[in-house]
Image (tube, rainbow, N blue to C red; front, side, top):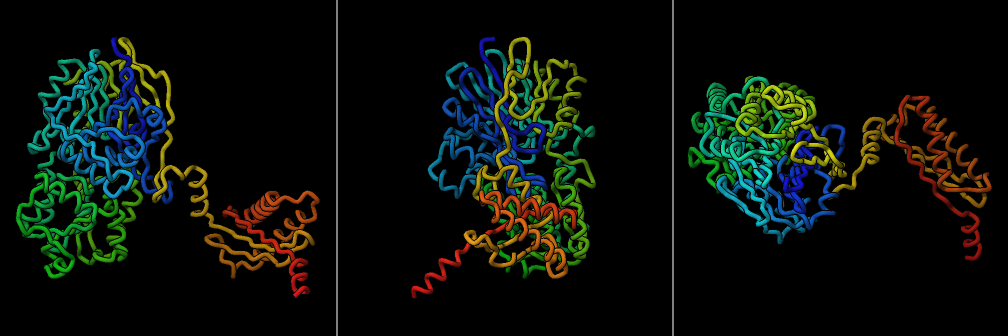
Length: 567
C-alpha cells in the first residue's frame, strides 16, 4: 500500500447518536460528521453529550475539514463546540449547511466563522495530495443526505451516514444507484456503514405508505390533531402538510426550533406548502379557528417532541395544552432510552381525555437501512473491509452477522470501540492503538465541567436527598456555642422525626467536641468525622444515605467581650 490509513471512531459506536469518525491518511485527518446525542435518564441535568475532542485538538493542524452527511443533530449537533477550538472548513449539501448555520447562530465565539462550503452529489474535491473526495446521494428523512467517499491510490474509504433504500422516494430523496455502482467498480477498500436498524428483519414501509397513513388518520379523526415530530424530519413535515391540505385543515407550528427549520427548508424549496394559507401564523389566529380544522405540530425543546407532549398533557404549557377528544399523533420513532418516558407520556395523554396514535405501533417505519438494505449495499460496493458504525453493540453485531451471510470473513469485519485506532494495510485491518474519547457533557453553558463525581452526587440527591448540619464553636475555649441546627431536604420530614433529629444532634455534638478536645485540631478531620458519624447513624436508622453537608462556624467570645469593655 502507498498510504498509511487509519480510522478512529470518536462516537457513534456502541451507542445511539454522536456520530463522528476520523480518517487519517498519512499526515492528514478527514472528519466525517460531528454529531451529539441526547442524554439517557441517568445523566441528570445534562442537556447533550458530545465527543471528546482532545486528540483532535492536539492534531488540529493536520485536520483538512469536516464533511457532513446530513442535517440531523446526530450528524452535526456538536459542530458549534468543535469549531470554537478548531477552525477548519465544513462541507455539506445546501440543506445540511443551512442547518449547520442555525446550529452556530447566537454563539459569540463563532460570529465571524464563515468557512462553509456547499457541495452537490456531483462535486469532487481534489486536495492536490493524491486524495479526492466525492459524494453519493442517499435516501433518508431529510433532503440533501449524502454519503462520503475518500478516494486514495489504495482504494476508497466510504461512509454511508444514515441511509435506506426506498424505491418510491421522491426525486429529492432518491438514492443514486449509479454512483454506488461506480464506487463498487472503482474498488472500496473499507466501508463505514449505518447499523441503526440492523436488527430489523423486515423492510421498512415506503414513505408513500406512511404518507397515505397520515392522510387516513387526518381524514377519519374529527377533532383537533396534535402531531409530535422531530423538527428536522423534513419528509414527515411535508407529509403532514399534504395531509392537512387534503383534509381542509390548517397547521400551527409550535416551538421555535421547528419554525426555524421549516422556514429554512421552504426557502430552499425542499419543503413546499400545498396551499398558500396552510400555516397559521399566530396563537390568536389559531384560537379563532374551529379546532376540528387545525393541526398543531409540536417538537419541543431541541426538537424532542415527547417531553413537550408530556407537559401539554399536564397543562404546563403557557400556550397550548391537550384537551379532551384531541388526537395526539406521534410520528417519530423514539429511541430505546425513551421507552419509559413514552409510556408515561401516553398514560398522561389518556388521563387528559385525549387519544394517542403512533406510526411505529402501526407499521415498520424507519429512516435507516433494514437488514436487506445493508446486504444489498454490500453486494453493490463489494468492500474489502467493513466497519459497522452508528448503533449500540447488539446492532453492530447484527450487521457483522449480516455481512458474513453475504460472504465476508471474520478478518474482513471489525466492530470498533470508541477511541480504537484501526489501521488498514494491504492484507489486514487491525486495532493498533487507542486515543482518549470520554464523553463530554454539556450542562447549560458549561462544557465538560460535569464529571462522574458530580453526576454521582446528583444521583444521590435525587434518590436520598440532603442533610445539612450547622453548628457554632469557640475553638479557643474548646466548646460548642449553639446546638446543631439540622435541615433535611428530600430525606425525612423533620417535624415527624424529632427523635431521629435529637439523636443526630447529639452525635454531631459528640463528634465536634472530640475534635475540639484533640490537641491537633484540624478542620478537615472535624468535618469528615461529622460526616462519617452521621452517615453510619442515618443509614442504620433509615437505610438511606443522603448527601451530608456539615457547616461549622467559629466565633471568639473573649474577643467580643473585650471590645465591649473597651467601649
